[in-house]
Length: 95
Image 1 (cartoon, one colour):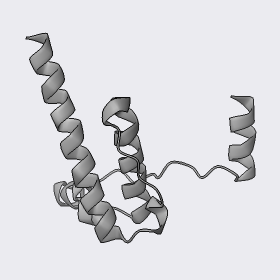
Image 2: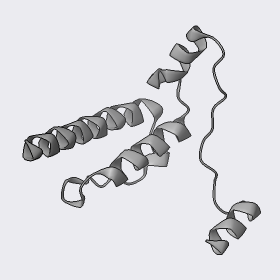
Image 3: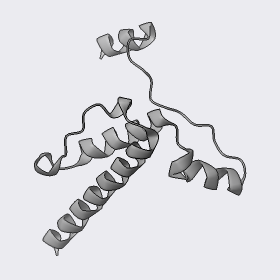
Image 4: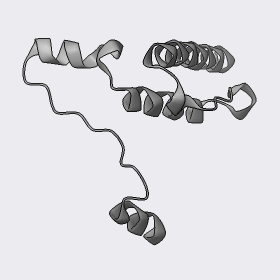
């Protein structure tokens, strides 16, 4: 944990993307739209969702940072679909 902190302070680890807090409803709607996300935010969302998937169903994506934003938005939708399917499977197993 100390090493991570030091690397963060030295700029060796890029911080998680942040967004300002929306003031109006319109700003909130605009901010929540995937198309308004920055490329780094889309990559972060993909990586976060992929990490939460079961390892057996986890797809391997390489070179995300070099892909265009349009490609990343498609990948994000695919990962969300996988994540939703996993949630449905888990819910069916518990019932």
